[in-house]
Length: 240
Image (cartoon, rainbow, N blue to C red; front, side, top):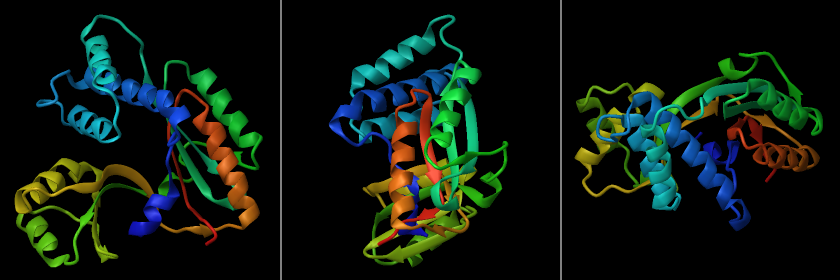
């Protein structure tokens, strides 16, 4: 499940031309987290996680600061989460997470992406019950026993721990994200996480053809062009 996770989570905006979109998405997420939970990262763990993630993805400090300053002011945009689910090319399951200030616009944009790319949008809950919402940590290592011991000592509920190809991957319920991160950091000072994220991970994957894989890439690119789309998850097992 560990290596496949990175394939099935559609990475948005990795090219230089897409950096502005990445900055905008982080800015929006940080603004929403700060608006709802306070602008002090020490007292708002969700905000702290987002800021750390943004810095890791090389989001400039001024983008983060502008989002925080915006959240401190009165009024501002009223962004709320929106989730759309359905089936992509080859019948794979798809979850599209958005932040929007206009549900009608966002739904229309996302539905158009589905309709034009061999996909079918479904009702709320159509596929999310076939995914697990997990905290995921990956770091270099070749022994999972000390990791398990540290997590058990901290009385943390862990879904799975994998050790392969010189990396250890820990899967835990999304609610345990901060406790897992703290326990690992305390047990292994200086630990560097290659992945520390909360993600929708499919319980089962769906092999798709090369033709469907090309259509899936086009579908994800279309979603990437939607300003309100934050992240896309799918269950497709891509051809080697």
